[in-house]
Image 1 (tube, rainbow, N blue to C red):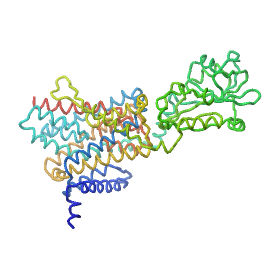
Image 2 (tube, rainbow, N blue to C red):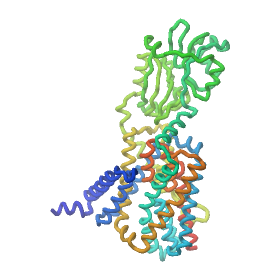
Image 3 (tube, one colour):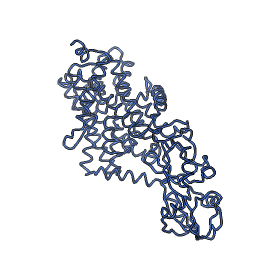
Image 4 (tube, rainbow, N blue to C red):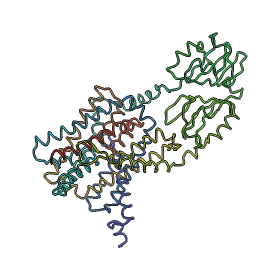
Length: 561
């Protein structure tokens, strides 16, 4: 039975794998259980890791650190790719508000921590920095504070850093729970209906300027009689597509640039909803017309074609010359759940779904060129992911010197990959990088990374967690950490909802990002069922991370100045 004992209590590869597997299996199962109607999801993996660590089961320290950081990178990178396409537009719309609330949370965290220090008088400033870092689940802040302590007080740094780590470990679990609790309290306080909030998010997406709007017109304006489609485009000077045209004699055709428009022709036009008044004034009245009934006998059909040919990644619709080669019209583009107007300047990406109108044989030929293969679409694009991780680690390792700081600040293994993933998700097609990932693959990558990260944190903290909690200082650290977590969040969510009227899904991502809390983001994503929490998380994360690290370093510097 030595092999069995070695498997459970040894320190080899098989032992490491089985420990992680058991922690994750039990954590995932418990995460499905609802307590008072609330499910913590993957967060239970953290507590299972703590339990396993407390029972004396250990993992090689270097291996544990590697799995923890790699899991965090996988989780953060998949989030960045997911939110990349909508990140910059969201930042323009709500970025200032969201970052303002995030800075309010950061400031209140510091205020509560300093109030505890001066009022309680029974905790050192270094221990308080550890507790505060754990309360907001910010490991880089802890690391920066410890490094600053080594630089400023090397003789006493070792003992103080160990105590700081224990404070972090004591406050971390309730830090995770506290963030999720603030989301639950907000939902109860304002009687939030999550389904309605999600529907509101979808409506906001659909109200985008690029949302296609389809109207059938009859040509009655003498000024556009007997002109070509190209000339009409020049007159209106807005993005639109005439997908079909019916003549007075009843014939239906796919209009090309040289097609001439006559009096009383019926046009099916796809445009931006914001431009409707212009078309109403220039073309004529709206008419009711059943295009499906009229066009099917003529051989004109509408099909959905998927871009899976990587050679078209980044190409603009206008450069493909669909009119000349195929005599078809692209009317709409579906990307990441958002419907876009098919303008000539819109750059295509692998995974885009095009609504195309034309004759059956022309659409078949176009489909072959575009790829139109679901099987190819499901193939994982590992090159993009790992080149992004490499670039993210490089960016996260760049030292940033700030005035008055003795130690340079770094974005770290979380901030660097997040920023790079956002840029790849938004602009990767310009470098011909295929950024499409199927929903199933993206969720698998995200959940796997999160579970590996939480299991590692739990196992690492488990050895000393219970003894720390049971000590006189430990119990106080847990209480102080919870106060540092929950008080600022309650104030912030009330401001965000009551004063700024932000969407609940957005607020969940905001508080998760303001506390740099991946488990809370996982809970928010599962609750919302859309990418709004992830977008808000990514919007506030960079500035929040910067401020968390800066404040931790400044507190140590002022303490030992």
